[in-house]
Length: 500
Length: 78
Image (cartoon, rainbow over all chains, first blue to last red; front, side, top):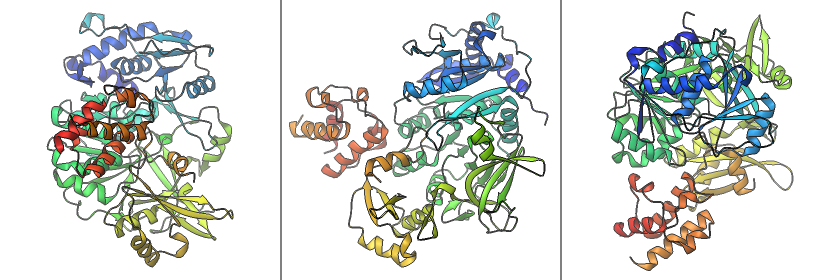
């Protein structure tokens, strides 16, 4: 692989880009020269006593992005701390990674009694003065970390996914090999919190190409802001979770997609009900249904959707295929006995390997030994995602292993019930979740988005098409299915709302 | 502005956000409320849509922050 992280960084500071727009944040534009100037000022603040991993309070501020670049030039990694998460969570992350320093563009962010130094960047002002650009890359190997992202662990204790500079370089290189020609002319959406790994793709790929990045301010309603950006700035590349499209679909007469060239979709199962009407508004768009866990550096498989296949998508239960692997990734499908599945239509757990794969969780031997294994000298990661190969070799996503429940000994796919319900009701959106009844048995609840209605007819229709144990016993309604900070369905919140 | 509209908006917003300031300050910026997020914003609008049998436009979803602003948008739609 010829592409290196060092090359990516050198491209960011390339003088040819100086006058091009790098970021538009809250309506304010910042050129590449300003971004690099800010980065070099922050670079000068950091030295070796801050340690190799540095905390970053990730506000929607140009200084946050400039800090990431400064840290990378210093050969260091960032550990994002989300302003929307409680301070206790920050402290857990800081203690777990033994951070010595946190960079913050918000001087109100104070960390008492944790023993870390806060370096505030809020007073640093952007300038276009090229003579002040003094930022040299520290010579560090690509095995050094680029970032550590903490995700919720099943035990409730966050686990840190370590991503190296080499992993990230492999990711950029893979993205360069899927026939997507992003250029410096492109205007790209970055709608995610920087604690969500999808954000890495949303700012790193445009930076690699010299394109401009449009962020969404904190506390705004994301889908309405996206529509505003489309109208005012004619965005050309949209990186989104499918829920964002689902929220916009009822208002398509007010959404202008004429400038959009690419949709990069990930984070949730993409359905035909979402992508087909979206493409109708601009048939020339190309969409990528991406798949990948944080552990394999954002995405590692893709399925291309364009005007040639939009009416003939490879899908099962309306869930669009996740396609084939990236250049720098490979997959292995295994059955319950860890035997490789090669034949089509046989479901198994998806395991991943390759240059994008994390070296492991931060100081977490238990998770590392459970989730990673060696087979024929290749190191694999168990994703917990159930998939199968279609006849043509494309991968089909079924569900999370955790979303498969056993009822009376039968394995039940919750997603299949949700899709069947959507089919029977002309597209109603629902989430099916297991709960334990008073007798201690597992039953199913269906949570339907929208106004409460007499559902007997739909319940009967489900009973006519599914085994009795798959028909939900509890029918609940919510005006809007809650989404978490990353825009994914918040099952924990639903459980809390309905005491399931 | 019709006081019933203001009272309805207050009631629906309070039901969703559980913030006393909504009942006492018509110019209270609801984005300052702890519970205000996009889900609650959409919930407030959906309830008003049902009560008044109207449909808000996309641009109207985010174009208000206070009771008076939302009541004004609502009134114009009636």
